Every structure is written in structure tokens, then in C-alpha cells.
Image (cartoon, rainbow, N blue to C red; front, side):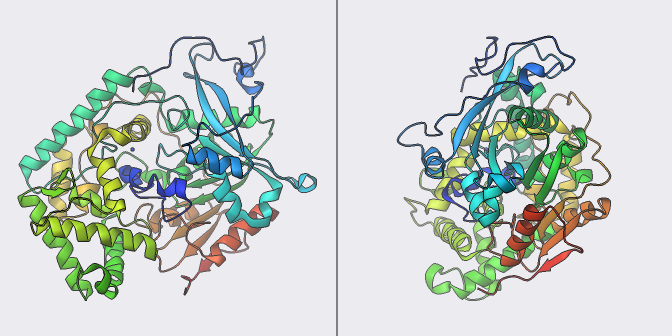
Amino acid sequence: MTGTTSPGRRRPRHRAARAVSAVALALAGALSLGTAPAPASAAPARPAADPLARYHHQHLHWKSCLLGPDDATGRELEQAGAQCADVTVPLDYDRPDGRTLTVAISRIRGTDTAHRVGALLLNSGGPGGPTLGDPPFVRRAMREVAARYDVVGVDPRFVGRSTPLDCRWSTGSMIRGAGTDRAGFEREVRFAADLARSCRIHAGDLLPYSSTRNTARDMDVIRAALGERRISYLGYSYGSYLGQVYATMFPGRTDRVVLDGVIDPARYNPRLLRDAEDANRHALRGWADWAAAHDAAYGLGRTRAAVLATVEATRSAAARTPLRVGGYRVDDHDLPVIVFNGLSQDNPTAYGDFAAGVRDLRRAAEGRTVTTPSPWLASTLEFALTGHGSGYGSAQASILCGDVPAPRDPETYWRDLRRAGPGDRLFAPVTRNINACAFWDPPREHPTAVRADLPALLVNATGDPRTTYAGARAVRRDWPSSRLVTLRDADQHAVYGVYGSPCVDSAVNAYLATGRLPATDVGCPRPTS
């Protein structure tokens, strides 16, 4: 998953703006979908052996991506020369003549038509993360090879500008801390059940059709509507799993495949973050070293041990009495998630944002007034403690819960939390806690049995605290035709075009340019500056 603040590693603005929404993995209204016929962009139904012919042969109406003067994403797309369109897809692929959805896409056309490769579809993870705004950022990462591709951003079904799914939650994520005792855990059981109930009430007609398999089917409709025989693909985090599912369901329809922040499909389920505790502890120690070196700016302690003691003292205070930060109250269900959110990006800007947030929390723990929290903390609290990100969290939960069933007995989660022991008060309460999937209806389909091999380029950092390096190694073992590009010594979630590794970016761009994978796996050092 994308972490709550990921993949916002100070990518372009549109990614940073949704940084907090990835907590539910790395894991943020009234429904307008009716029974009206397909919009004009869908070609009329006609007799054909292909039951999806009307979708595959639809005419796309390309238009400006700018929705209004305050649409920053649209403005960035407009400045980059992108256009947008709505692709019509069936709600239920078993009933293609029934209700329809729209899936919003953007495209920046390649300029080197003499050496054109084709369309490169993007997915930035989540699940539930909007990707329509990503082509400008990806084209910058691709450098000169971008001219050979039409770079296509997609807001998957129920996400962003596509037909929405919103459970009207009071939070942007189903991921929270379990608390410090059984009473706190029981509150979480009720909270998770309430979230699932709200989804059944407000989006029950859409939930059965929210899944990775249906998102992959939508991708293939997009491929056909674009007039492409095959597509290339770049998927980050959850997008790596989506790419694996697409390649399995539609063999022969992929060209060049890059999966960055790789999920092991054998471990993909609503508890995907489980066992990421060690990687997050490592990331926390790395941040603490940086904060100690910048004690003059943040005052969190002059040594790693002192900084970590500040974090623990703040957590302990929140467990005793909720901290007042601006208009919010932060308790032991919230504070571990805030810490978790601060640890997906390994760079000074992200570290500084997190340090400023911890400084505000520590001040609140000491009884001082924090009227206006730092921007990063303010956005994190707004996402976690209000309904501002309800649409994101609803879509994310609907995909995770709609893909793989979760254990239904709360005791399963309580025993797992107990096994973690009192030594981990920060991460296990987040990664092992119960969530809404425990109260979800069973998925309509079995999970995809991902194909045994695919010639893809895999990318992962050794210290990734969301999609851990073990997952990338597992996929590499299962796909002997693939190659793995490893960024060493970085606690970074998603690397290509994000972290600033010339070694990683060059390896990916060489593959996109030639279609040839490296002869062997590639190891890249952490950049020295």
C-alpha cells in the first residue's frame, strides 16, 4: 500500500496533497450513479462475439482537464499539454448491458511518432489513490524516453474524478491504533463495525463491484478504447499488485511492465501491513538520527535515544489523556497512526515535516497550547479525524475488503496484538488491529492466482516501510524472467522518479527505451547528496 503519507515523498504537489491518505495500507456524498443508459461516449451496442464490443470500440471525447480556477491538478495537466476523457465501463462485467460507470483518464501524447512504443498506463497505489494527475510527474522522470509514449493517468473506478463511492465516514481511513488495553480494542471493534455498516447503507449497491479484478478489467477496456493492442504499465505500491493481476487476467496484452514498491501477491489481503513493524522501527530510528542532528530546529533531543524517548513520552501522555492539538483531540488510537504516517519517505523535507508534527504533539503532551498545528500534522489530523477524506478511505476499504476476506472473529486480532507484546506500543497496534474488512460481505470472486512468471522490472528500497523488501524478493523468485532494481540503505516507499536515485531512474528508463531488461539484478547505492 501507499502509506498514509505516501507516495508523497515530496513528489510534485498533487502527490504531496494526498500524502495523509495512504494510511490504510499505505492504506482516504450521496451516490449519483443511477440506471441511466450509457453516456454518448459509448458506441451503440451491436451484435458481436465480444460482449464488451460497445466498450472496446467507444469513441473517447478528449477535453480540457481543468475543472475550474481552483483545480490545481487540472492546471498542472493543462500546462503539460494533457487532455482528459471519460471511459465508459460496465458496473458488473457479468451484465455488460446493465449499469455503467465512468473512469476518468488523462493523456499526454508522445511526440516521437517515428519511434513510438505505445501507451504507458499509470497507477500510484493506495488502493484508491487517484492517478489522473500523474503524467506530468512521470514524464519528467522518463526524461527523453517520454517522447516515445502516450503517458496515461487513470482514476480507477470509484476514485477521484471517476464515478464515486463514498460511505460518508467521519474519517479518511479504516486504519487506526488498537489502543493500550482490552477496553480500547473493544472500541476499535465497534468503530470497524460502524464503518462497514455505513458502507452497506450508503454504497451497498456498489461495494460488490469494487475489486482489483474489476479495476484490471477496466484497464483492458481503456487499452482497447485507446486503440492499443498492448499497453505498458508503471505501478507503485498497490499498483504493483494491480499490474500482476492485469498481466494474469489478460496475458499477451502487456509490453513493458515496471512495478515499484512490490507487493508479494501471496501476502496481499486486508492485513497487508502486518509484519511491517521491523521496517517501521528501522525507519523511525533513521528519522530519530536526523532529528537529533537538527535538535536546534526542532528540540526533540540531541541523540537518537533522546528523540525516541520524546516520541514514547508523547505516546504515553496521549494514552492517559487525549492531547489537544488545534481543534482535535489525539488519543492512543490516533497517535500511533500519526507516527506511522510520518515514516514512508526518506528525505529531509519529509523528515522535517514529521519532526515539526512531533514537536507540536510533544508541546500538547506537556500541557502547552497548540492553536495551529504544523501543515503536515494539520493535514494528517484532518484526514484521520474528520470526514474530509471519506471518499478516499471508502474506496480503499472497498477494494481491500472486496478482494480477499479478512478474519471475522475479533479474538483473532486481539491474540495477534497480545503476541506482539507490550514492547511495541507504536506499530503493532496499527498493523495488527482489526479493521472494517472483518465485518464486510464476502468477496464476489476468489483472489487472482497470479501468473508464475512475467518479464517485468521490479524496483524496491531495502528499508521500504510499506511494501517491504521481502515482498520484492519473493516476486523476483517467482518470476525468474524479471529483474530487481534495489535501492540500498533507504527507508523509502516508491523510488523511481521520486527519491532522486540516478541509478534507479536510469535503469528504469533504459528498460522503457529498449524493452530489454538488465542482464542481472541491479543494486543502487543510496545517493550521497
